[in-house]
Length: 503
Image: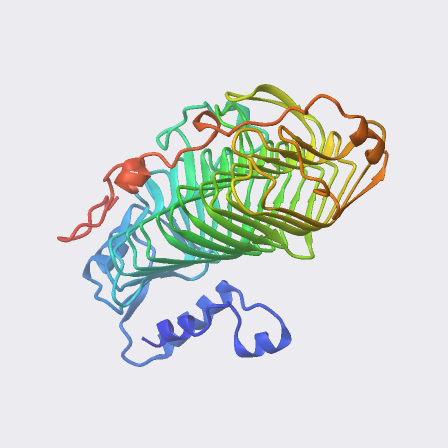
């Protein structure tokens, strides 16, 4: 249909004139234009606007691929299913509201060869999900507001091509009430996941905002994700988790992750289980605990800003490769450490300012209680380590710490154009647990009091240990059971029809 071609031709969210002027075309404008085009096409299969629960239900049941079912200027109560290839569209997200009832998804969608679509409306969800998608095929969710009281905002399992654009998902958790959320809260108790995607071959996420969920802002399992723009903020637990699969993140803001009474620390982002992650222009800020945790992944971050976090800004362990670069890279004012690397094989850190790390005490199974406030701490590097064009100042304990205990080796360490500076008792650059070769720090400049302090150091400095399962979030049963592992099978569209409540 014409409207499908229009949207696919504009993946950046800009029309031709707006692109020339540098002005974004909002998803609301796209949907308004699309609706006008649909209604203007003679013979196009678009029914009337619906404000009655049974009429909307009947229209969806009888719709065929390519049909558009319209929600009027009203609030419709019930749980509805969108068949394969059908478009469910409102007048606008402010005027068209679907309020789902408990026990099921408010809207369940079957993907189609011609993409199924939900757009231009608000979903108020009191059930398992605001929008639930299951099965192979294509789906577009655009210009939608989802308010969740329990369950999941958007849950997608097994789609071939998924687009989520201009979507706002909001759960009930806030900084003011986070301490009242029980540690083991489930989707029956509160809204736990904003976006959950499992086994999605291609997911394009554009300018979404997610806040107020009790476990994950977004959890992506074994999927290929391209994520541009938007914000994931003020979720308890983890902002974004990429578990296996791959993710490309561009211009995403991940801030103010909340811990509350959770048994696990909070994280702006977690990347794990062999995932490949590439980012540009990430903003990671002001979380209660960690910024980004990398465990057994290949990761590259260009021009990242990581500031004001209550624990290490960037943590990587057991990673085959880890790279930080870009002239705009800024890692400042974090507790415990700016960058912590543990047993990482190939690591490159360049073109970064890493300042103002402050002391914090943490307990690790491996090392016990330690107090750390380092710009960069590298423990047992397992391969090539390259540090270049770095400036580190006013890190409360030490600018750079290389610990070669166990299997660590200086053989493949390169340091070039690195400056460390500090005052008082701050150290500049320390290598320990093995005798460093002569000239190991020839590419490094010490400023302020650091040269005197480094030469006077006798006892080795405490180091962190591996972040174990006791402090790492889990993707849980979604890994093996998909979305059903989190919220069960209720409310799925089946092969024989639409399962749900007509109200």
